[in-house]
Length: 120
View 1: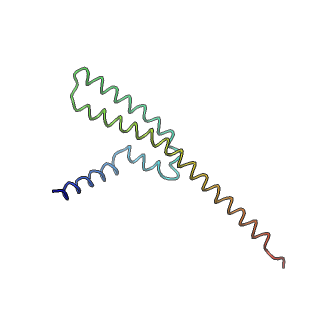
View 2: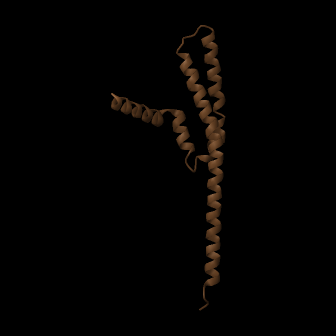
View 3: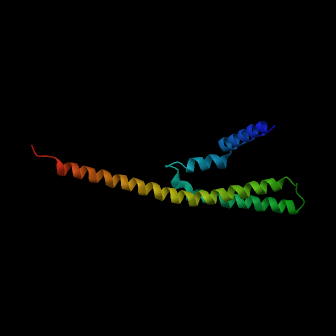
């Protein structure tokens, strides 16, 4: 029974990770080229929170109870978008610092080779 639950959990996680739009967007942002889109992705938190507010208004006016799940999902996705914005700034700063150090090291290696080259 536990093995079946474990497998089902893994399959659900794989499906959500692979096909849900917010997770696909997060995977794209985590790449080196996508890091620059982290801060603009934070703006997506606004529409998610607006949908959550709209759904809570519908629930209070007698809407169906399953809208609670939509509210929860929207708030969760809004938090993910806010978090990826902050994380991407840190990761982009680290990546640019690493690239700058590599360029500086390469320039110093070229200069060192030129200085140590014997004239013939």
